[in-house]
Length: 166
Image (cartoon, rainbow, N blue to C red; front, top):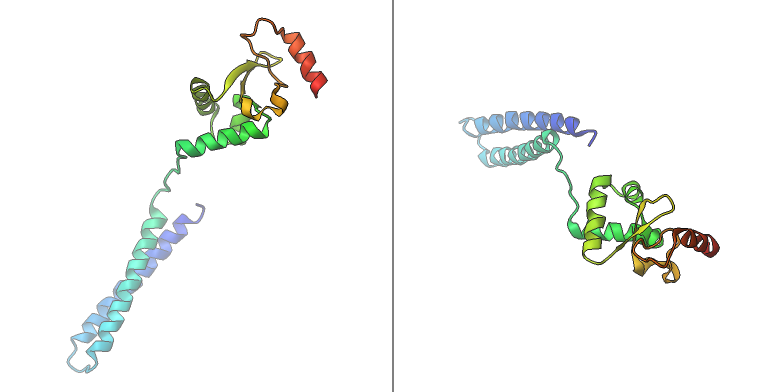
């Protein structure tokens, strides 16, 4: 956050002023010439609470922000959303552009989804790896990739088919 330092210094100021007033009102409570000790106690309590708020502001302002790591379920839903948006065929680079994941993190997640059977690996026209999510394919057909293990499909045929379908 851009203004965390300002929050910390405002908290320090609030804390310092509150401590000054708490000390003053406590001193006034024990002054024999003052008859209204209850009011002074109320003021001391008010400034003590105000001081606690200042302390919390100081702590929040000067502490380092916590990394908000995504939980595995959220990451998986994000990856599936990107795959759906790209009609079931996504590269690691496309995933890295569309999410806060790095290329290495995206590859690890996509490979894990292949291991669990949620996706398959296909090859694109430039021999790039394209992860295929069959449930998101339009019409159940690949448009940008082919199955490298299907001996009957030649790459040129898959490319021609993709251009005809588009």
